[in-house]
Image (tube, rainbow, N blue to C red; front, top):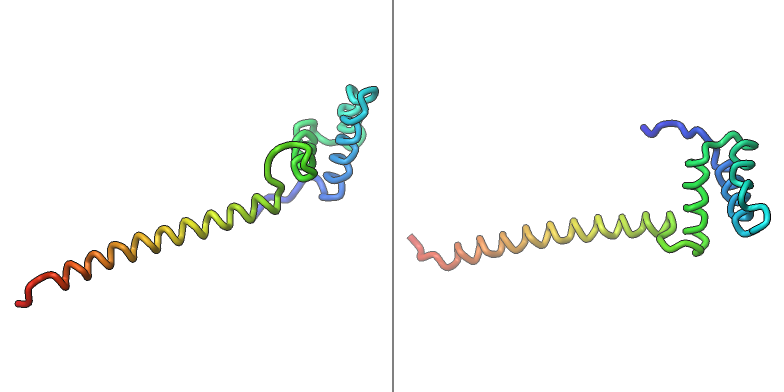
Length: 105
């Protein structure tokens, strides 16, 4: 079971939205992050991660968004399973081909 989250999803979205907006404004961007973390009682590293995730999802930062990353992981698991099944089938076909080539007793 996953550990309970310290911050609600609504707080995460709000804080990330405020921080992204503050980073776009060059005049108030310097102290805005500190102000947001103090006002919302959020750790700066947590806010940094939320901002990174929000910018990745918006296409500002390179990378894959959450849904895309989950889909890629699912597809990679499927490929791994198919490769495993293929290896099993290859070894089984080699075994039965060897059985057919043996002279009868």
